Image (cartoon, rainbow, N blue to C red; front, top):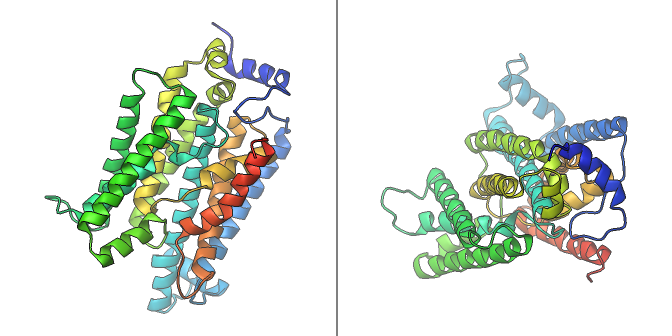
Length: 369
């Protein structure tokens, strides 16, 4: 078929108004200037959020302190801060806030992709069981006496990545005969996730002492506290690459949102495209979980909110979802730091508390509640 998929999708979307599918509703057209203005506003809000998030915490950091710390580190000739305050800003706060932005962007992009690939508006990055696999790998490295592997940050991160890849490999093996049908992906992902969750609990109960169990449970709930510059650099490389790969498949995602048959009629290689997008999603999710633990609901809620503002065309939706996810998790992490100060709440707990009512709202709007 020689038709251009992008042009065909653009023609198909308006004609599909009123057709109820599991994928997001057909778009309302938004002009290019309006979309550009919305994107610029998102960039400015993200920059302001990162700056404000760096100041927020149990220790007071003023705007002038933030400016002096950044100026001194960037060689702008500003007077440096006292060593303790400089370390607080540069070594603890700033990496943490940047990590929150990168992880939020990754999870939001993963959720956007999965909701189109599976044609399931309730899909999120943990649909594939990758986060459960990453958690199991990290716990195994931290608790079991594995030869040649330590329980330090690099060992735990490596174990999480291996666990994520194992869970994704098991998912693909189970789907090898039946194909990548949307319903089968959902059901198989749930099964794989439950399997690795059970393995994590088994390892903790059988091998960990009380202190280790407490520390790992806190990590499994999701926390930005371990973020340091080396992990920020890794995420800063992986996240833009994953977003770029998803954005290059934007037209295919528009077609997949209407089903495999429709996408195939538009000249899209359905199986190859689905496989590529699932791999991208698995990598982004595994890196996020390996770094900061399991954080839910970001990939479920953010795409729906952005779709309402920017429309569901994925070449527009994906970058806006990345910005919104970054802003959302920066402020959620800030709330986690100060809500019960001086005790810090895992950010995954806050996202769940915010995500559950929004999840119920999505169900109600879809007529399923």
